[in-house]
Amino acid sequence: GAVVSQHPSRVICKSGTSVKIECRSLDFQATTMFWYRQFPKKSLMLMATSNEGSKATYEQGVEKDKFLINHASLTLSTLTVTSAHPEDSSFYICSGRGIDTGELFFGEGSRLTVL
Amino acid sequence: GESVGLHLPTLSVQEGDNSIINCAYSNSASDYFIWYKQESGKGPQFIIDIRSNMDKRQGQRVTVLLNKTVKHLSLQIAATQPGDSAVYFCAESINQGGKLIFGQGTELSVKP
Image (cartoon, rainbow over the protein chains, first blue to last red):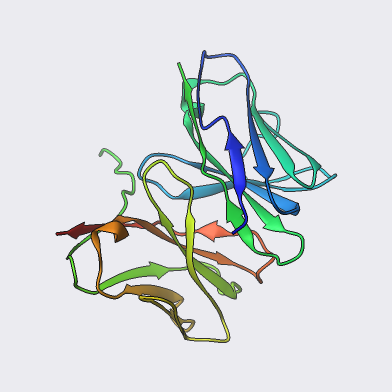
């Protein structure tokens, strides 16, 4: 099946620094990618929808200046957590929708810990 | 008083028994539904999907039932195995191309 790769899988950073998480579709082209965050023992919360070549659409309550999303190509989307604080510590998961089939494939997630 | 956050409901079953996991979805306009399995520290894994023009769909050892009248979805797992232990989420969208919104989730624990 199709594979979505996230990098890094784990990252620890100091408060105030910015962290970039990459989401790549390895064997398919994704016109649309979704970014979710998940707190322990909770569900996945949709943060934003990004379409290749255009600005991301953020869900209500998600700060677009805090969580910068770029989807520059059909195989890569990035999420940058700017000026990270401990409350940004979470599990971030991306998913990509295939251009051909419309199927949605999830990455394995990136665990961010902000000290 | 102290507010209590929502915690994942849990379901504990004996190995070999059937499991039924329930989900109430929120948007009456949703017409596409998916069940996912998530193991600790991993991304969601697709199990089975169903469109709103159906009320039942079967896969290998799994069955999804959809009741649009009460906006309820269930996942039945036959002959539950220890490897089925995970958190199960239902997700809904408006047509297959829309954004996917996840439900609360249920933690399934299978006792050997």
